[in-house]
Length: 115
Length: 116
Image (cartoon, rainbow over all chains, first blue to last red; front, side, top):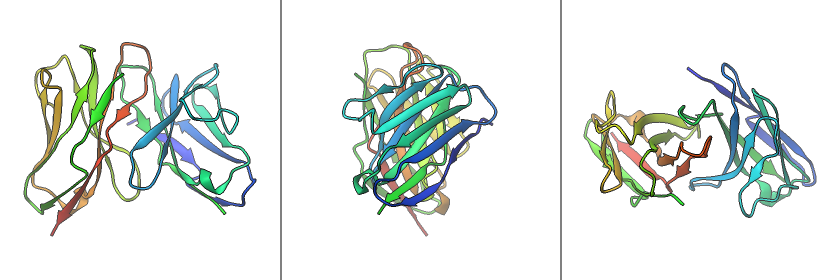
């Protein structure tokens, strides 16, 4: 089956550090990737939609300068949390899809902890 | 805009018994997809079952089945012969394929505990 790889799985770093998270589709071309954020015991909250070769579409309330998204190829999207602060600590998870008639496949998520 | 409602924040079931998780949604679309995802403590998102709205037949995957009532906009998940490994958060999700690659719209989730 389709596999999406997300790295790193766990990050602990100091406040002010920028952190890059990668999302790769391993055996299919993902025209679209989605980035979600999940707080403890809550549902997934969509942050942005990333289409290959174009600028990401951010959801209302998500700072695009804080959360930089790049989707330079059909198999890789990256989320960079710039100048991270403790309030950015969360679980970030990506998903990828070939097209609208195929299910989305999720990465295993990244647990980000900012000290 | 589409919305998904899961009215049961938590549920529990005895091992080997059957449990039903409820989900309702709101949409003006006629063609769409519905999903149930399982998120165990590892926090992986695992697709349990998928239903296309144009199919009247309820989807089934081994011990998991759905009761899809399109007119009522209801999409419940039935887990038969519950196992300890079924303990997880379960999310109902909606997707509209009519506008290209659109994101999933999730409900708030139901935390299911299977008790030995």
